[in-house]
Length: 124
Image (cartoon, rainbow, N blue to C red; front, top):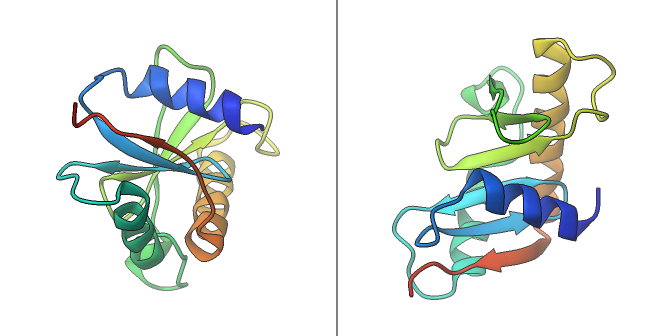
């Protein structure tokens, strides 16, 4: 999925224009509830800590949200403000486990590669 598509999806999902968030290459978004300084740097620090999956720990846990306004799913993890978008054509099937594992895998890649592709600064 290309960056423009991901950016547009997250802009619809996070419709509040005063919300600051940072998008990473594989679809993970870090919402900054207390944005300070350089937003990409702040989000990268959060994702570095809470993005990578560690088997047997809470870092491997996930939940799934089925948004009303966007096709696909949002996969959650151990940090409430780290969210990963999974498109309807990405998982092998549409079961909760397949979607969750796909999102967790994407979050892990983003949490280890840390490639920022978009910054949304809602601080005004």
